[in-house]
Image 1 (spheres, helix red, strand yellow):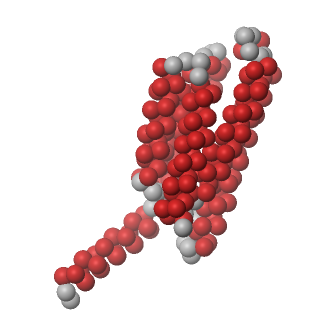
Image 2 (cartoon, rainbow, N blue to C red):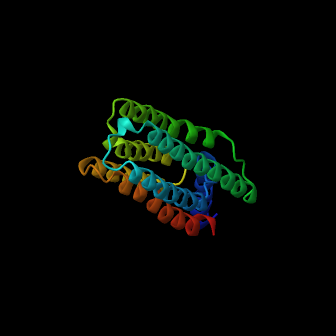
Image 3 (tube, helix red, strand yellow):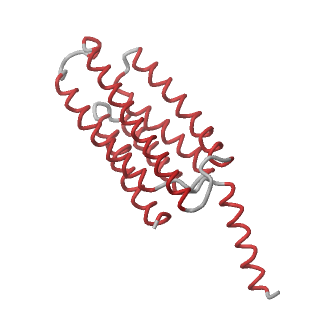
Length: 201
C-alpha cells in the first residue's frame, strides 16, 4: 500500500472516530430560529419594561412574572426547535439522535446552565436585577464551551463571545436587554447561518 493511501486511510479512520464521539446532528437552522425567538422576546420584554419605566421593580411583581414567562417561552421554543431540527438532520444522515455523544453533550451543557439558572433566581430574589442579563450570558457561554467538546468546535467561539458580552453587560449596567438581544439574538442568527452553510448544505 502506498504512503498516500495509508494517510488517506488514517484520515478516514480519524474522521469516523470523531463522528462517533461527537454529536454532529446539531442543525444550524436551530441557531437561526433561536435567534429570531430571542429578538421577538426581547421586543416584547422591552414593551413590558416601558410600562414600568421609572418605577421600582419590587412594586411591579406582575411585570417580573410576565418577563419570566416570556423568557421561559423563548427557552422552550428554542430547545423544542433545536431537538426537532436535530432529529430531522440525524434521520436524513442515517445517524442516531440519542446516543453516548448526545448524552455527554446534554450532561456537560446542563451543569453550567442549571447552575446559572439557580444563580439568576438568587439574584432576582435579592433584587439584583441589573446583572441578571449579564449572568445569563456568562453561564450560557460557559455551557456552550463545555458542550463544544462533544459537538462542532465552532460552538466554542460562540461561547467565548457570549461570555465577553456578559462581562461587558456587567461593566455597563442599564443596557442588559440590548446585550441580551445581541447575545441570544444576533449572535445566534450569525452562528446558525455560518453553521448551516458549513455543515448542513
